[in-house]
Length: 148
Image (cartoon, rainbow, N blue to C red; front, top):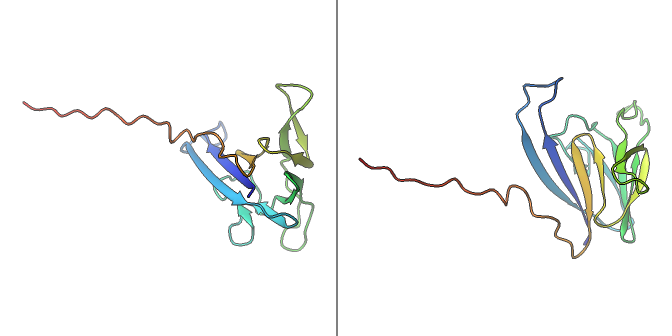
């Protein structure tokens, strides 16, 4: 079953120097023909990333079509969500290697990613486990026993 992997990488910025660095990983299973709501509000969204304050309560619609995902930024939905999200969806420009594009909708193939706020969303295929988590690669501190 295809999954949407979300890796939120929280870092301090000039505007928010008091924020403690953290990383959160979530995986959301996708079903063909169903539309999912993506946002920060855990109680109302199908896919929620509550750690990322740059993602609005209801940010985008995600749907699986065959082996790729369509992600579309939502418009205004009165009365609960009257304003459209300010940030756009960021994707890597397929024509230029190191450039990114701000879009309101995009098709994502297996292994490809898009960013909303501080969260990278990657489409993982049926047999794709994804890269090893940086947390898994952490080396345990050397244990020393000291005696007098």
